[in-house]
Length: 472
Image (tube, rainbow, N blue to C red; front, side):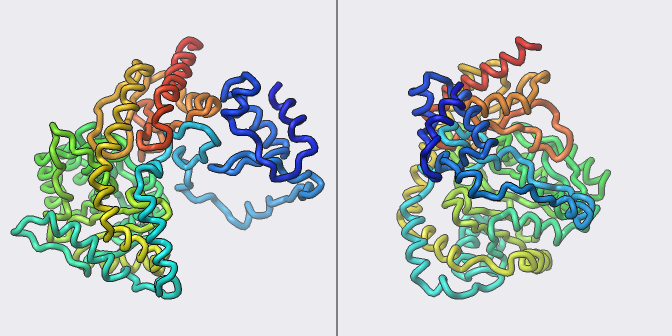
């Protein structure tokens, strides 16, 4: 048994010694990745080793050097009371074991980031005044100006463009979502969300106490007739949507759909929150051309509240985003965001602004579409070869994900666990629905690391799915 052999290997070694990688253990012991992961889980449970996600597995400190007396925390249950709704439960937050293929998370691989420019910008920012100063509540003027200019360049001539005054810099758009929900909707009131949608929007809505109202959405986006019905039935004043390569479906709203949706929103006197998370992840396929500009670029009434993030496109270490809002709602959002974050670190803002002004950033944006398309095509080919049971409704021309529907009898939690035991991390689609899921879905990230292992990873998914079918 591999666990026994590893116990012998560990005996006598000093705490902190790194164990061989999964790949090395597979080769040296003639076992599969699943066997290695199971052995490491056993040893971790016994306290013999400890895993540091993204780094490796190490010999743990001797038991006598650690506290062994059990500690009773039961008193906290009475002090805390009823558990609040909206805890973080998404599969995408699971840490990736060493040597596993990560198809579950929502971030691009570092090879798809302007890494050198980010490192240099952080170094320069650390040497500047930004390292020892505060920042205005709404953010650095120069950075707000950059976000405003990005929208203004796509604004039609007959529409008043946004200005830096309309922009609030955020510590990531997750904080902006909560701030927007609190600013517009009172606890217990309805918010309409596409279903499925970004899990973080579901989390933010639940934590702010609003009532989630799902609107079915598919490969081309939601039905405006159904949106009208939901507005009428609920009296909602806010619709959260992703018109530009929605997470997870990859839907890109057509010009006609955009106009019909906006007509419904205007008729009901409501706001539309436009989450433009995929702004920098367009592949510009020849048959589609460039996607339409953000809805906010064509709206000067203040009806569209626009969210834009740099966390995925620049670096996950730079938790910087922005919300663009016009009129009184902007002040309400600023008050809500400021009450929780006060202001965004000027160090991070300065570094982000530095990156955005470099030739390296412009070159990165020019080459990124081709690199994304290559990874997408690798994963699509693997899905078509090894997962014929899955329905891939469309091959998206942007974003980071494929959205697959599996047979209705699929046991998703078991499939996720079986694949993880064999070194493949996948995301259960159930957590991406604001209400009950309408089927069994997987979201696979084609922008993750190790694209050369996509084929083998999807083969594992297909094998485990067919194994379920044989057992059934």
